[in-house]
Image (cartoon, rainbow, N blue to C red; front, side, top):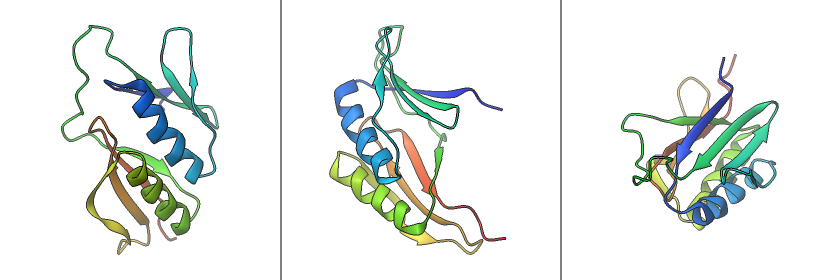
Length: 124
């Protein structure tokens, strides 16, 4: 359904340090800067793109928005959370935890305030 998710940042190098670390914790690869100055992370044909706003205004986090990132295991969720904290993120809502539906989840805000979650799939 989606081709990509684009979020704003006021400091792309700070964002790169955070996202490179959190995606490495999930087994991903570092992002690449494209010719337009956007930081791009690719996985299975999907893209997360980070950019400074093209209108020149400061980037702000979406109120009520959350970006969900798939994790292979609870240990990946914990590694993602720890890498995010170590690279300027803020733990929110709860520590990494198993939910009643069987999903193991963690929530962070990136250094620009964007809300992210890493989670395993729910039990079947």
